[in-house]
Image (cartoon, rainbow over all chains, first blue to last red):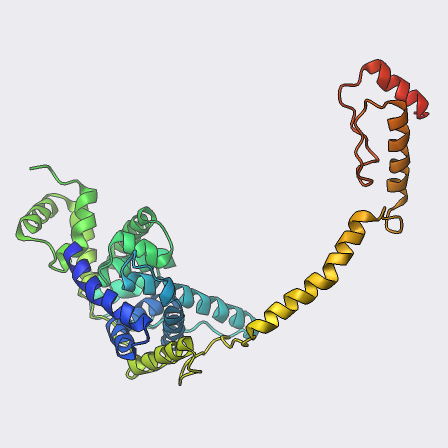
Length: 188
Length: 179
């Protein structure tokens, strides 16, 4: 993990420096590298593709404006994902306020897995696991997704979701434990 | 070789699922999983989640994001707003630097005399009756007991501070004040 982190960080650091100096090509490369994971993480928070896309766009804009403040203590990806999570949470809060005002129904969660309230036969255990993963509380859900699906260390997970490394580890293990319990309940 | 704890094993299962551990570590982890039902159960969940195909971003999203990012970069360079930038409340009004200096000067010019006036004047017009009475008491106390420390501040003067007064002196003061 350390070697991969270092190898990925070096090119990112160079791109960040060039982007900071106004190099649009470097910025395009950063977007190409990190946009997919940013979208998945945002989707993990807001569970709505359009809101996820908007949150990621706002995050890119904020990141570009804040490039001067990125000190390089962490990987660019980790720093950027923390911005994405914040923007996604903000989008969720705004959506909740609008729903209270408009009395709209909750959007169906979309995260690459069938929604839990749809009467469909889940063809595989993987599908079932993803559906149940989406039902976990936010920090457990994000900790599991960032650790398992995006390969972040516990320290990086903590940075991305705004908690300590220890809390990220606890959230991850609780999330896995709860997921396992729910899978067993489904099988019973 | 040190025996692996369950916590240590479970921490490394994501790396095992992604094939990011060396052969030796993989061997030790799998040995543990063979002998530990709990960790084997956790491994099953890790393997399931890890095997899910990654969610792809919608078609065209990358280009949209790149456009927004370039727009923000242009704005940062002072080149005006770029296409797709600023979806949020980000417009800034540019105030010339001379304007800020002029505003500061006006504040100082108007505020300084007012401040000095407040400091020098006895605040007769603004003092309430309690403050005026307190000031008179302070003066009376100072005449009776010159050793007593009395604050010059008319706001505080309602409550003179007696440092080191004896009980007898205090009683005498109170009798003089009619208390």
